[in-house]
Image 1 (tube, rainbow over the protein chains, first blue to last red):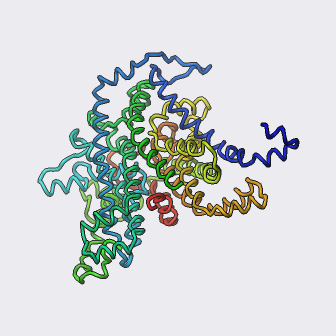
Image 2 (cartoon, each protein chain N blue to C red):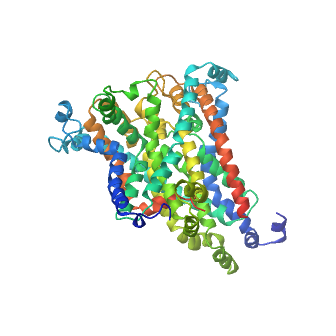
Length: 311
Length: 281
């Protein structure tokens, strides 16, 4: 403002300050949207998790929410469905990471220059383009008792079919397998791009030194693929914790609640025939958010380091 | 190149590779092929237990039936009504935020940037209750507009990350030269930066189109009726109605999957470029 006082004409003030003002003008609409729909709701959810609320509002906008402090969290502590969801999320997290080596393996398999390889690469990537709803329906068909392809395959091999999605012990793994299908495709495409950028002279030099096979992969190729691996791990971890669609489509959390994950259990509590318990749902969401924040902070921390490193 | 190019290995190994390729592909796409086959199988085949053999006839009537006996056409229209405005909105917002964060050096630049990046990764469930409440207070619950507004806001996070990094990689001299000439900042944006951003805009458009078309969670949270539901949520309710009519479920799934699939095959280069951003140094 001191500068504004020294310059009498507003045009001059704008000229000397436009480099400070312009970025904020450009950021304004994006920040308003993002703040209103993403940042602020995070705090609202944390706040709502201390209330008992059915999600309804009177015509004047008031609610009948009652403050119960840590009541929702205390209830979570003894809620077996919550514990099941937490365990399943852990299974998702661990098994979903198989997508990373899986994607690498397919990428190495496809990293050749033969006729039609481009089409092969696109077709291998194909599952990622499909909606998870479609993937879920496809695998539900695949596993379906009596006529599903997978069911018949198992029956043919072992003499006894397994109805994967009806079996409380197996259903979660059946869903994770369905989730791996598009995720492997995603990791594959990340690694194909990475392999494309591996320095050929280093590979040739290593080859002259007698490196090949696993040793070549481990000591020469993988270090160069680190950026791809990093992104693959990040998107896979986030994807595992976000898993909702497949659980909803394939089993709706069943049989007997055995396939619930936190994201689905939250939805069930807050917005389904099981009840409109917004506060309780919000508390589940907060737990999921806290778990994810561990990974998100790690990711952001590394990005900040890279930013600083680049200057 | 890694692995060793197949042209340099022995002849039997080369032939083995050529044979392995199509077999691996068929195994990989087995669920998809199964569903595609089921979608053109007459229901009599399924009733007679002919699940995997040759279909007794090609029943494209399944597709006709999906369109005539279910609101799937309406669902697809709704999906377009959500997806297209979202893509436009996101591109506009993220070009601006990306420009601001990529070009200007100011103190809170990194803070704002990482707020967008971090927000992009939060689970949808932490936003669900407040966003649903906000949408209903605006009177937009069960409308495509309500869905569009949320999607624009949420996708801005990822797109800002993308655009900002893209703009960072542009030659700075261009902008410095324009400033020396006394070109106004908004003109630099419109006449210099935006034209250079075309590849990024193309990549993000394809990517966001696919993400939004395939969104299921927000579709179920913010829309409830056939008049507004996108095809993902619609397919789920149809699945409930078509119990054990797998030929219809399959045909419906394939119809719902077509637009993003077509988008992918037409714009493959941009799609991959968008997805693999950051995968190489």
